[in-house]
Length: 220
Image (cartoon, rainbow, N blue to C red; front, side, top):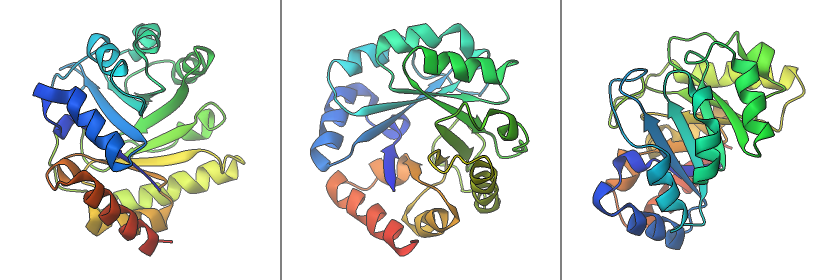
């Protein structure tokens, strides 16, 4: 299991230090939530902030685009230093084309699904994705309660991917993830877990990472 802490819950006044502390604690990924105030009811940051952080960190930048028409910004985020771009199935009219373009630009491509969005589109882009993100809450704000329907959706995503021979595609869960539901999420097929307030709100980070990893082992 990979833990990808969401910087949405980090100290925005000193994100460079936060990334350094994550790296020192043994984390390999960082989750960066980009919100436009239109696709979701919140606004965060864009390519300039990610570019500045890229100069300060060697972590894998898992960039989650919660924006309308994300295809407009793919090259900007590549130039900023994103390692992976995750776009929402609900946000782009040409999902397959967008995922293919992310890969052409040299990044890994992910597709995200909101809680009420069926996974039907995954049948048609399974060969174009490197990761599938299942939202455990309605996107926009950190600290929301986890939706239990997420478990079945993770199992369904794994079934679809395996049916297309894509056992290599990772399944990520974002929203409401904490040590209490980690084991069951891993048991359902999750490979990457995003945690914001449940991670950053319980330092030290090395100890919190161990808590999540121990819970993940219980789900295997």
